[in-house]
Length: 144
Image (cartoon, rainbow, N blue to C red; front, side):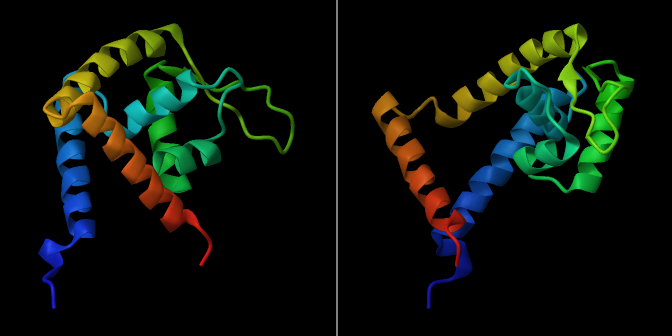
């Protein structure tokens, strides 16, 4: 029997954990958490704003945890949620100017971490890793 520490899933989790720790450390100076950074990136990718529920799914956290993240970002004036949402509709968050500026700084920090993580791989190796991970994700997202 192969020990759990010799399995691919364990190696993948170790890589994810190491990447997350490095991102947390790099963003701490701004100060941002990795979850907050993920929210800013998600909002930057949307022209129409994004609901808390959709943000939670995109950022891999629970809706309850996302509420805290969004509230913090809103208090810091990095995002804006309109007060005039129609009854029964979620208030879609959007980036503010300050949020956009901070996101630019955060991207540079995250890019430096990614360069450290993947910089020793050739562009061909990076493309192969990306394709392989996409296949793993597709296989795991198929209904059982």
